Image 1 (spheres, rainbow, N blue to C red):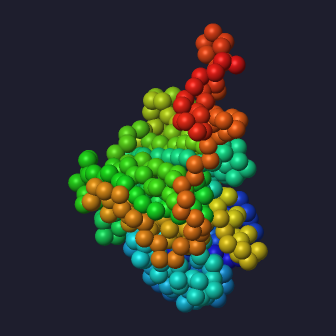
Image 2 (cartoon, one colour; image 1 turned 180 degrees about the vertical axis):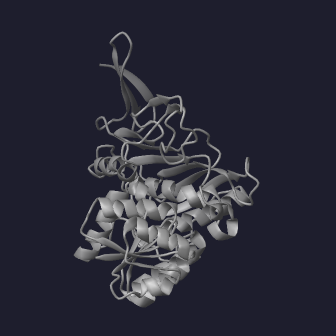
Image 3 (cartoon, rainbow, N blue to C red; image 1 turned 45 degrees about the vertical axis):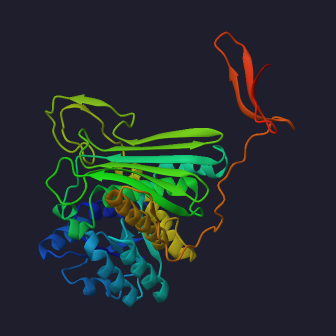
Length: 395
């Protein structure tokens, strides 16, 4: 397949590096940029035959099969509309929209046009995430009770991120979209998110949007998804996930502390890793950034989904649900109370029962806990099913 890239900036280059370096079955063919000089530089760097500052010319190019959107958030809707009208499969960077209303429009457009809408949520494709999610789906952690994701760094690289009108918000819409979808994947996409409690504040930067936020997403089965996001974190980019289930726990460190530590006086200079603030002192490089951040696996899934006529792991519908949760987070940050998640077209389970499958020890007792004490004694803590009495029994 031949690919058109809409956008020529930071994320477009990450995408391009992945597309030319991994699958090799597909080729970058065209690029659009609002700045023709940047479009020409991008085309020269990646050896593309077509470049333009006319988006419709690039989208409608007869040799283009798939369009990748790597534009600022306020341009996603118009770009998806152009792709749907042209009948081209479209892959859009995160977040899908600035609001759930925008995302729903984009979802409707691709479904009505009969083209694939792939949501480019790279952090749901990292090698560590893929392996941990497989373990969760296999039941290794039992029933998932809580999933937490954190992304924090010193702030975005482009000016439009800091403009609330263009971006749709601050660190919640920029980083929270990652964290929300990660937690949602672990808890189960079939489980409906029902309400959100969120705190957000502007603590460091002179902007109209938030630069720090913490939120909790309550799901219909009682599970909690938690996100921590910041544009104020100093020292690089911190990406961590935690998952807790009835039978186990997963901790993941994706970035910052990667197992690759290096000290330098700074003599060599140069690039270390995304959002790294310095090239001297103790540094935390990343061996293969494009791979570790999931871009390779993401695009492989997207293009194989097109070939196999199946949905990818991350769709426009997923992007819409994430935007709906973000809307509720902003409402909660303003009101200070739990706010409902408003999803017009819920496609998952309608089960709303809170899961309470307590472990049974025998006909009389529930098992609360089994424990080995420091001196080797083993004890059982049990609860009588009838009387409610909690007892301790030596083993």
